[in-house]
Length: 289
Image (cartoon, rainbow, N blue to C red; front, top):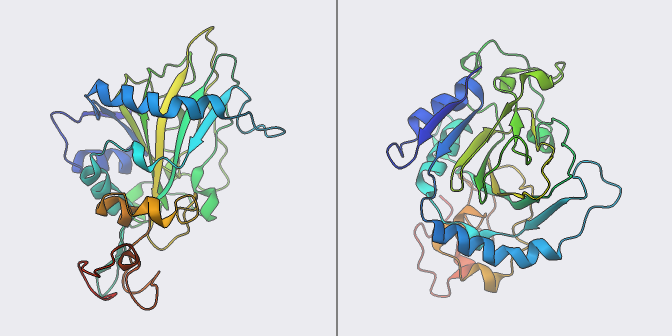
């Protein structure tokens, strides 16, 4: 099964990308970030944290040559609106029949640095964290949009290749039921240029590949969005102090969970939690509804 590619500089609209996710479960977005100064700044910011990370002991899921950096809100050089539109649609964020919108929220942020010698990660589904049990489908349209719990985005900081550990994923595996096992022969390798991105439904089987090079690093900046009424994978309220959150732009504050999932999920003192961040109380929508 083919994986579609889109050039963000000429086609920033979400509809074609959504169609690709519906068809194959993933797509390549070329030139999501074209300002290489931004990529250089991000790498300079995270490099000390990459170097400070230590291998997970006794955990096979991430090889010891992998380094991870979490808590990365400040790293997002954002085309937020397109990604939010995609997440809104594929996660089906409308609560029927009253059409109250539960907007997507950030689920996690991770920088992955995979060094030479790393073994491949086993193929897996990321929606297992939400215990998402899926029946087999002939096509995505056999079940209404909303079957998936999360959608993930990985932006290349350096050039991911098949040799240095590019994400491999199985196109069409978002249609599989629980009884089917992943087949490595079906894997597609998401090879990217710096600034390109790979977008994927969390129900697709995927995994980091082996880094068989002598001196290349696979560096990617990853985040997942999930439904506004599900628990976030990375606890956004504990990894950031209120003082830190107050420094973020309003859209980032809402994205990480400082907003009500309508009609009234996640309130604080019967108010929208974003009011905790503003002493004057002047926020759009004074109440929860």
